[in-house]
Image (cartoon, rainbow, N blue to C red; front, side, top):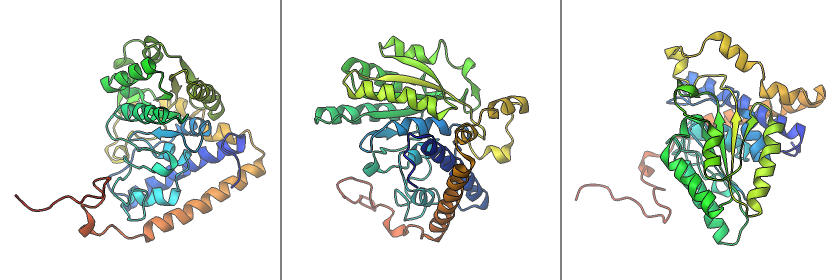
Amino acid sequence: MADPPGTPAGLYRTVRLIRRFEERAIGLVSSGDIVGGIHPYIGQEAIAAGVCAALRPDDVITSTHRGHGHVLAKGADPARMLAELAGRSTGLNRGRGGSMHAADFALGIYGANAIVGANGPITVGAAWAARRSGRDTVAVSFFGDGAVNQGVLLESMNLAALWRVPVLFVCENNGYATTLRLADAVAGTITARGIAFGMPALTVDGMDPQAVLAAARDAVARARAGFGPTLLECQTYRFDAHHTWEHKARVRYRDDAEVERGRSRDPVELAGGRLDPADRARIDAEIEALLDDAVGFALDSPHPDPAGALDHLYATGLRARTGGG
């Protein structure tokens, strides 16, 4: 598996890995091995693939409740990620983080976040701290269109622009905040939020990993050179449910014709169509083998010992006290 991330083969490998990982995870939700469900990233793979291909290993990302794709694109082990979703002790966070809080600091993954928009200040703080330490680290904040009206995210944009913090704000605009249409929630435009703070802001084809990569490379280079943040609005479409709960609830807020139009430009097919069929088949087979092993690893791993439930609460190693008083 030596396809560099920014090449056509590398981009295809990433979008295909994310797609098949999510499909496998949905199967594990159905079987009860993943409890509580997930927010599938299916349809939005090009954004994670393109942005993360523009980053160095020491760069930082923060993510959202729909964060599996970002975590995988930044290099996380699919086996440990699946183990985390299944609540196993071999998971990225020993089974304690689950789907919405996966992190791997060694890879620059400073965590998914279940609170909409809440990763913005974490991203800005991480980038500012790195710059103060003399490092040219760039940090990326992924968020959805549902976050653009959150005050904490707008405050983060303001501070990043004011202090020229090396941050890339990436809005994954799939048109819905859960079931609320963008037009019913957002006054003006998403890019106008960035422009208001004096930062470059542009709209990108979020279904094409090469288009996302090109825009992200420019923004990352600008940030690394000391010119501050950029906002990318990546227009995409979520093919599956907001949450796997919808598979049972059958919530109807999109009609079949809309979903079919949204699926007409599939990131996996766009990226795969740029490859020689033999190369594509090779990558597909490698990913299936990788995920077969990942599923086996996750399901064969033990659940955490309840006796250690209070471990790892504090970075210092301090253990929480139990009992009254």
